[in-house]
Amino acid sequence: METRQPVVAGQFYPGAQRACLAELMECLAERPVEGAIQGALPQTIVGGIVPHAGWVFSGSLAAMVFEAIRQRHEQVDTFVIFGAAHGYFGSEPAVFARGRWLTPVGEIAIDEELAAAILETGTAVEDPRAHRGEHSIEVQVPFVQHLFEQARIVPIVVPPRERAMALGEAVGRIVRDGGKKVVCIGSTDLTHYGPRYGFAPMGVGPQGQKWASEVNDRDFIEAARAMDARGLLAGSAEKCNACGAGAAAATISAARVLGKTEGVLLAHTNSNEIMRKKMGSTGAESVGYAAMVF
Image (tube, rainbow, N blue to C red; front, side):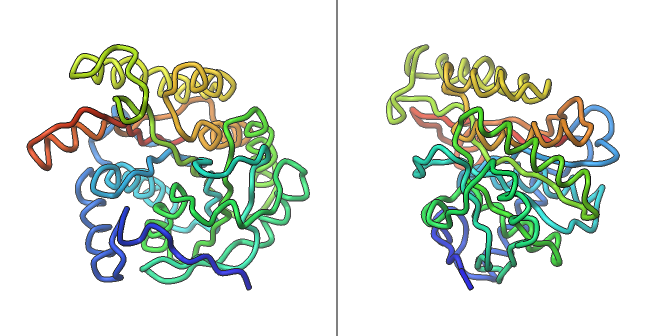
């Protein structure tokens, strides 16, 4: 049985079970879903977009998405978690199709039946090696384990290519025609702005960071709200406003097949806003984060 050990526990989130659960609860309490959006949550939620930085920065936004799902669906059988391809350079989406994942919370099983069905569509390949150093999926798993104790996962690393849309559509059809409650999660951060990231078209400093958040991030958010997967992929390639555009495009494409026509923004912030609030200081770089549901 293939077992994936955690690779960023103790860095992106606590490595000990008690500390991990304590910080997870803090994340859930920090941004209550109630009152966070105008209007009600969708009556059914089939997908979400979450950030994947360290929990101190973006954990509360990820928690909002999973809590919103829990409020609508206490029982979820499987989460298909589409991740960013930070260190995987293959052209095909890569599925971790067998075995289990471990986190400080415990172990969680792969939905091998669903993974096999996805592989049969020819829109992805089985490649557990693609997941060895990838953090974008791992940091979501403890939220699933805590809020949905019986759920399983299908982790898929998704490069930012048009193939992501075919994958999402295939997953959407499998979910639509199946008997399980499955939710698709796309893991991406937004604009990485500043000298360290080699991206500062509007200059270094507060004005450039404001543009990154209010213009560049918003372009991604509006494409996601409109469920324009193709435009989102093209925009991210041109504007560098998402590191996991493939993951987001797959989620949106699946949600479209499942009947959704519009995304709902729960929250949008950036690392400098978090630093200002929690640490009383800011830096030369900033990374955007959004929480959305479909």
